[in-house]
Length: 126
Figure 1 (tube, rainbow, N blue to C red):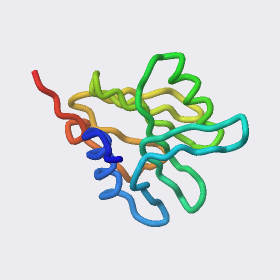
Figure 2 (figure 1 turned 135 degrees about the horizontal axis):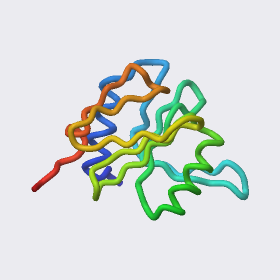
Figure 3 (figure 1 turned 45 degrees about the vertical axis):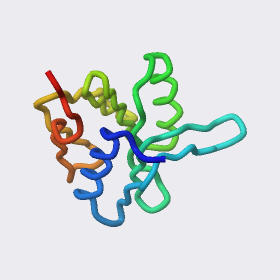
Figure 4 (figure 1 turned 90 degrees about the vertical axis):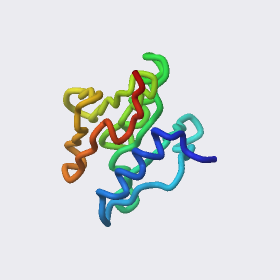
């Protein structure tokens, strides 16, 4: 299944800016961690076998909180993409949540080498 356009652009930005040992997934994936624990991500960035960051699609607030808690067991950062609001929230395992919107450049404590203009991810029409 093909990425939604926002996720395709974000994946391309990550792939262009990251180098081994970091690797960007080519598609979204459902992960099963145990019989009681599973989570889906649109994009994953791994360093060897470990998750560095995962990117998930925004939904309702309680669902996002739950998904973020599940992923924080396995990944240092969770990026929550809200295509309707054209924002990305970077949620680190520890520390403050950062919100990036039009005019901002996304930066990550976990991936300090990246700088992604939000305008390169979302097509905003007025």
